[in-house]
Length: 441
Image (cartoon, rainbow, N blue to C red; front, side):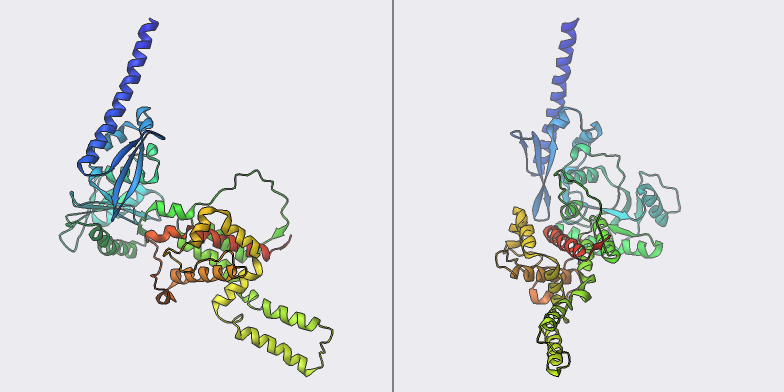
């Protein structure tokens, strides 16, 4: 009896391995037919590595072979990988979207301020049809040309490819409800044409819905880009929390909380952190001239009744104003950072992380042209202030952009991921300024 049980157990394990190998082999064959690169990384993680085309390059995604073998990946998902046409699609760079030249389809995820995705889908479907439409049925959207446009739940291909990007394919849930707009028959033969369709026709449709319904609606941009800029290193060292000793100005701390809450919106985060600095410009724009005047008055030779001494004080104030302390925003920013952040602390922050240091010292073309000089003493503070101001201008408007030869930074640009270290730097400085302006409880 015991031998029979052991025999059955071994056969079941072998069958599971057989099905796993069959699934992976079938996926590899599907990918090979469409010239999509894939390979098994058996040396380390036993993963199937797939390079899905994205614009002119590829995006590397993974399927854990062991999870397939152990049954951790749902059967429905395995079937989706085998039975659907996911291998015929490519990613749309910058968006949660996919397109296929072979099938002539573009599909882009749509987001809204309605918490229930099912409720959102029902609301939009009612705009285009008086009939009761089932949850699984797409509704047709009127088109200004021969392109067929549909709104509804995302396709299985979209769900699989979207979740593959996150690196957590074992957690894919094909029953997860996402709303998308699909374009069919647009003669898509390039990524540029698919992208253009988003910038023109999709934006037109969504803005019309926004105006008519007052529903906040938008195309969902690439979540992995937002994740890369919003990731904060958690301090995993053992720490002790003492009794609070200081209070912080409400306006500044509110702006700081606002920046922290803008998860996934790096441009908004950057501006909110910048506003923390900006809040103190009126104070620090006078600090340098105040200190000079204070030092002059403390001189034992100073005589309040001497007109020459009074004239000298006026001259100090005017000199500071001419030098820009009371003037342009860049000078005010420099004065604020200089008075709140210790040079050694700023240098340590930039240098403490190898990747962060390399980023700021890199001469490669990035979002900001200013390279930070870590080893040149006080110049570090000026460099940091100039860099912060340059990025702020590129986010808010085109001010000074033509001088630098760079384009403004747009919300859906894939280059937003380059903001990560600049966001960390600005957050560090915002914290220091809030601390500098704190008062005892």
